[in-house]
Length: 88
Image (cartoon, rainbow, N blue to C red; front, side, top):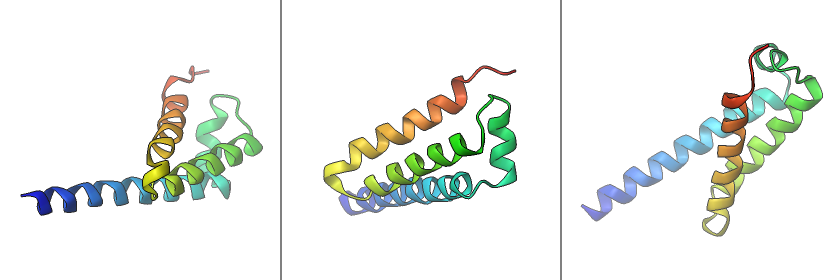
């Protein structure tokens, strides 16, 4: 049972890191889908790239046990910023 739980936890962490790299990379390169989405909240291309860099940083920090919590905080802040921004 303990081994199955470790495998499950590892899979969840790797999925979160994969999604962080995928979305952070899309923001950092300025994909039109991302820039259009952030344009609703008056965030320009440079702002999207900065948020993408922080998303990639959070994903990288999640890979190391000593910085795992900080990586999660960065990722959660990015998600919270996306979800709480007012519609315009």
